[in-house]
Image (spheres, rainbow, N blue to C red):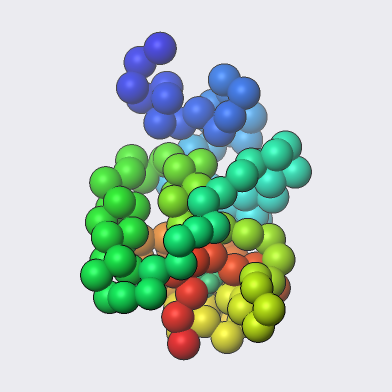
Length: 127
Ligand code: SF4
């Protein structure tokens, strides 16, 4: 398997392009949402911990995300600890995160740059 194929693999050995007709980098908002939701429906587990408590830990996660291929959506979700529900006792969610664009329903953190729903969360959450 070539590196390119691995980068575009959305899990199960099928590429995003085969399944959705586009790569994540080319996909529109609705298609990206579908890609994300499908991966979770199909059992994707992401790295919810540790939550970055310091700027240094936060920056390290950003560094890890920057190293990814633009189409490696799966790793992006895993590293960021993406979740399709609020998190923790405080029910943290995208809705209150400083990176969430309410009207666009989008995560504006450049290292993520993905559609997000108000009730979702990831461990790069900040207020
Ligand atoms: S950084 Fe995480 S919690 Fe914040 S808007 Fe983006 S996905 Fe949601």
